[in-house]
Image (spheres, rainbow, N blue to C red):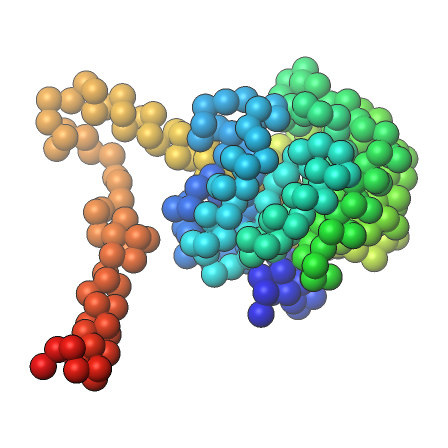
Length: 298
């Protein structure tokens, strides 16, 4: 079964789909190991691993390489954050074909102008693309899909840009009608009220997706009660990694001996397990048995 089909089935069968953010293959694997339904290959996190702004600096190829590596590593669906789609409709069409062929379950594109800036940046640039121009991108993405299960998630930035609820509803409706498979409604408020207002007013048939980075006190039960079908914890893995690496490196530099560092850290064995190092011997023994059967080893 294709990963896109698996993701669709989860949306149909579960009260809410939990998606964990990742920035590389190891973090994606940890998302899978700890029971999330899918991986979010976020542009903010991937940009941060290259120490560049989340401002359309990296190319599609660079983002694609990161997301496709996650898809190769994991057995759960990967959803790729593709910013504004890397250009116009023709670019979006190329992007969809490339990501779908790599086994990625879906892509998310947002209705801001290029170059975009992170939506949570204080005083950041949040100019919206015209509705017509973004609908053109959705139409191109829909036509480019080879399998109907591949998901195109339309991210609505009207609340982020200060255009209001009416504009958010109008755009979300237009995006669904043009072929979007889900609507990600984004907010930078500290509480989820405007997200809940959107969900209560939403009469569409496609799932609602949220990213509760700023309104992080909201409960999963509350999201379910407000008809939210997918929640993306987009950047917490990156922020935790940054915090603990910074903390440990500071102590390492000041320490006389590594044994002076009392902070907990993963063992070498933990890393070996993620790398599947312990599987090498069993796989080599299987090959050896096959070679014996073929007469190469007595």
